[in-house]
Structures are given as C-alpha cells and as structure tokens.
Image 1: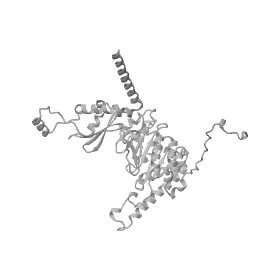
Image 2 (image 1 turned 135 degrees about the horizontal axis):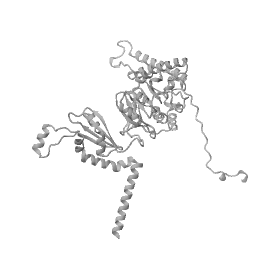
Image 3 (image 1 turned 120 degrees about the vertical axis):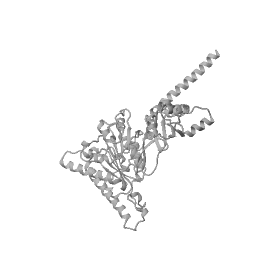
Length: 462
C-alpha cells in the first residue's frame, strides 16, 4: 500500500511538473526557454556539433600538420574539421555562437544550412550574421520572439539612433539616421504601420531633434504629437508651404557650411567640412526629421491647378531627399500604396529612400516597389504576412540585407503622453514658427468625491 502511495505521489508531482512546463511554454515562452529550453539546447549543441556540421557539409579536410600530429600522438581516426567555436553566449531569447570559419568556407555556406541546424539543435530559428571576415555568429532563438514582442534590455545607442522594433533573431531594429538618412514605410490599413510611426515618434521625442509632420488626413494621425512637433501640415496647401520653408532652411544650412569654410587659410585643413557635423557645436543647427504620413495624398490631383501643386511638392521632397543628409534633415515617407502610377517623380523619390519597411500590403506591386530592388525573397516574405499579426513587417535597405521585424504595441494615448512630457525639448526654429501646431492648455478635470452619498453629513441635522 505504501508503494502505491509513493508511486501516486511521484506520478502526481511529475504530472504537475509537466503540466506547468507545458503551460509556461505557451504563456511565458521566455521563462520556459530560460529554465528548460536553454539547458536542453546547450546539451544537444555540445553533443552533436561535430556530427551536425559534417552532415551539413560544413567541414573541411584537416591540415597536413594536424594529420601528422594526430598520427604521432594518438591512434584516433582523422576526421574532417568543423568551424572552430570561438564563443557561446546564452541570451534571454536564445543562444549566440561565434564561429571561426575554416579556410575555403564563406558565410553563405553556413546560411544555406541554417534550416538544417535549426532542426538538429531543436531551436525555433537560426540566423547567420557576419561579424568580420572569417567570423560568423549563429543567432539562435528558442521561441517565436515576434509573437509577444519584448524589446531587449540592451539596444544600440548613439546620436540619432532610435530603437523601433524587434528583429526575428532577437536583436533590436533601430533607425540610425546617420547611416540610413531617409526611409519609406508602407502598409495597408490595420497592418501596424501607424504603431511603427508611434514608436518612431516617441523615440525621436526623447532626442534633441526637431520633428515636422505632414498629415493630409486633417491631422488625425499626428495631431496627438503636437506638443513635440516643430511644424505640422494637415492639408496639401499647408504641405506645399511647409516644404518650401524646409527647402529654404536646407539652403540656409548649406550657406552656413560654406560660410564656415571661408576663404583659403581661414580654416585649418582638418576642420574643413561638407556637412553640419563638422561645424562647431555653437554653429551646428539641430537635426530635423520630416514624417510624411500619407504620401499618396500629395500626388493625387483633380484639376490642372492641383497638378502644378503636386509637381512642386514632389520636386521639393526630392530636393530634401537628395540634399538633406549633409544638412541634417531626414525624411520618413509613409503610405498605404506606392507605385509609378502615382505620377511623375514617384520612382525618383523612391530611389532616394534608402531604408524600406513594408508591412502587410494589399497588392504585390506595392511590395515590389518597396523591396523589389533589395531582394526577391524580401518581396515574397512581405506578401506572406498574416492579417492576425499586425506590426510584422519586412525591413531592409538598398544594400540587400533584410529581416522580419515587429513593433511593440503602443497606443496613441501612450505616444501622446510621451510627447507632452518631452515638449520642453522642442528646439527654437524661427523659420517654422508659423507652422507650429497650436497646443491648448491642459484641462484639469476635478476628481469625483470618494465618499458615497449616503455618508455625506446633512447640515440640517446639525
């Protein structure tokens, strides 16, 4: 009888443990990975590394010196040599393994076997990143990090660097305006494009930069950010005037750079600059980011007069994109649909936008317009985004690299609160004063009394 009780107790404990692990794996995948998944994956990796690399064709013949030493010291069988492990580092979402490639190997060889490595080691995904010539890093994730987005604690930082989303390899996707000055963001309604812009604006709001917006939907998307905006245009006519003011500011900044260079021998050779970042701090203008919410509204025309306005605005946008980097003026162009049929200048404007972020779109032509010059695989990946996964997008740049990302959920109220708290960071730009959005004073609503009516004392009874 005691044996049966002991068996029942042990079985109940095991069942409870298994049930808890299964529940944690679904509801808290990060906890499950840290407690169960990581030790199991580490054991599989250590036990099968050599055989897995050999099966994937990632080994090379040993050198003659190794053959001679092995034959002289041991009688072991001489086997092919896999890439040397330089470092293994566990993370909250997976593992990072840095490998030194053998002579004759290249990162593409390892990337081609990423899917087989994933199955061999029982992880959710394996991504290959080149660290430097001859060294690659296997970024393994133990679960789908895009299902429940939690930004990593350590994110890249720097001047004009804004963390925006999570990559599928567990790293942070950032907008580095000095590396990628201009970008285009596309997405159908409900795809998460607006949430991406909110995360971008809240990140920029905390930096010493000027933010200008063009929102031709009467300002419904960007008006909540008004306390932190230096300028806001809510219709095409205001957008035309704002673009003219920005181009005038652009020319003024170039004049400032030219004046600082001066005549020969007035500036030391090592201090000569061709952009604002080489200017002294007291002369350097504040960086400015222009966010265009719906670019198609600037292209739509109904009359001859509207066509002239359209051509003028597109020309000004292209000038900002061509010349803005050196002047510290950057573009974020967003839209639901973008194609050559928008009109003259559409493809020329797209060519100036290095960064590309494409959410779920309604037609393949838009995906090809955004990612077609980056990679055919990126276009295919963007057309396979499920509607029940808003915020998922394919991000790339014209260098050819791309990855799937997802922005953390951020409500409009939360983004507006950040803009109110950082309103004191709005820089002084006299050229944009006429476009500064009006911010009404906050209305304090008195709190309701916490005492119930039945407990309020009656003056007549006193």
